[in-house]
Amino acid sequence: MSSETQPSAWRQDLGTKSLPEVHESIVVPKTMSFWRKLLAFSGPGFLVSVGYMDPGNWATDLAGGAKFGYTLLTVILLSNLMAILLQHLCVKLGIVTGRDLAQACRDHYSKPVSFALWILCELAICACDLAEVIGSAIALQLLFGIPLVWGCLITAVDVFLVLWLQNKGFRYIEAIVLTLIVTIGGCFALELFFSQPSISGILSGFLPTPEIAKNSEMLFIAIGILGATVMPHNLYLHSSIVQTRKIDPTPEGKKEAIRFATLDSTIALMFALFINASILILSAATFHWSGHQDVAEIQDAFKLLSPLLGVGVASILFAVALLASGQNSTLTGTLAGQIVMEGFLNIRLKPWLRRLITRAIAIVPAVLVIGIYGEGKTLDLLVWSQVILSLQLSFAVIPLIYFTSNKLKMGNFANPLWIKVLAWTTAAIIVTLNLKFLFDMASSFVISTFF
Image (cartoon, rainbow, N blue to C red; front, side):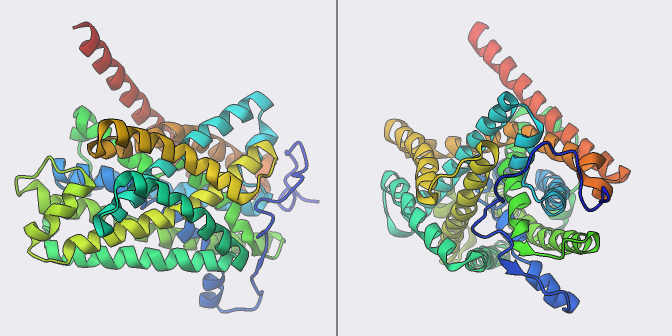
C-alpha cells in the first residue's frame, strides 16, 4: 500500500477513535454540487472559531482599544492569519491519519513527554474555561443583576446542556453554535454602526508598527490577544471534529475533504476576525478619544457605552453578545477537554464528570479571587488567563507542524516547502513573543524587588 494512502511511521494502533460517539456520524454523499458539499462539511470550523471570540478576547481587546486606539488591530489580523494556517494543519492531520493531535502526541513521544504535554494542555483548557466562567457570570450580572459569585456557580449548569446536545447529535451542537455566533455578530454590527469609527484609523491600525514590541504594556496586551486568538486546545479540538464526516478514504477523497474542511474553517475564522476587530474598534472609537483610556473592565464598558454613544440599547446588545460568547465557548471547551484526556491518556470518563471537573477547576479560583479581592479583579483574571494560554501555545503548535511536515507520517499529504516556511515562521513568532514577555516580567520583578 502506498505511503499516500497509509502513512506508516505511527508506532501503535489507536485503540479507539477520536470522539467515538460521533466519529464519522455525518455522511458526505459523493455526488453533490459544490455548495451542497461545502454545506455538508461546514460546522467544525465554526465550532473552532468559537474559541477565537470567547470572553477572554473581550478583556484583551477592550483594554487594547481603550489604551492604544486602533494600533493593535494588526495583532488581531496577524493572529487570525496564524490561526487559519494552524487550523488547516489540524484538518490535514485529522483527515489523513485518523488521529487527533493528542493521539498523535501519545503515539510519537515517550510517556513522560506525553504526560507533560497533557498537563500543559489541561492548564490551557482550565485557563480558557476560567475566561468562560467569568465572562458568563459578568453577562448574567449585567443583564439580571446576579452577583458574580452566584453567576460563576450557575455556569456549572451548562454541563447538562452539553450532554443533552451530544445526545441529540453533532449537527445539533453545530446549529446551536452557529446561532449564537450569528447573535454575537449581529450585536456588534449594530454597535459599530452606533459608534461610527474612523475608517482611516481602522485601516492604519491593520498596518504593523515596531512600537508594539518596544512598549512593554502594549506587548503584554498584544501577547494576551495572541493567546486569546490562537488557542492551543482548538488545535486538538479541530483535528478531532473534522473526523465527524464520513468521507471517501481514498487519496482523492481525502484531498477533497481537506479542501472543503479548510474552506469551512477559513470562512469561520474570518467571521471571528470581524468579531475580535469589532470589540477593539468599538472600544477605541468609544473610549480612547473620549477621555476613558483606562476603561478595561467589561462592567465599565457596559455602563459607559449607552451614555457615550447616546443609544440606550447599546449596553444591552453588548451584554447579550457577551452571554452568547460565554455559553458558546462552554460547548467547545467540553469537547476539547474530552479529546485531550482521551487522546493523551487513552482513558474515558463519563462526559458529565469530565465537564464538572474542568468547570470546578475554573470556578474555584474565580470564586476565591472575587470573594477575597472583590469584583474589580475580574479583568486581571481574564487577561492573565489569556497570557497563560499564549504561553502554552508553543507546546501544541510545534508538534502539530512537525507531524504534518513529516512525510513518513503523512505520506504525500506532508506539508510542501512554502507551508513549512510559513508554519515554522509562525512558531518562531509565537516563541519569540513569549520569551520576550517572560524576560520583561522577570526584569520587572527583579527591579521592583531589589531596587
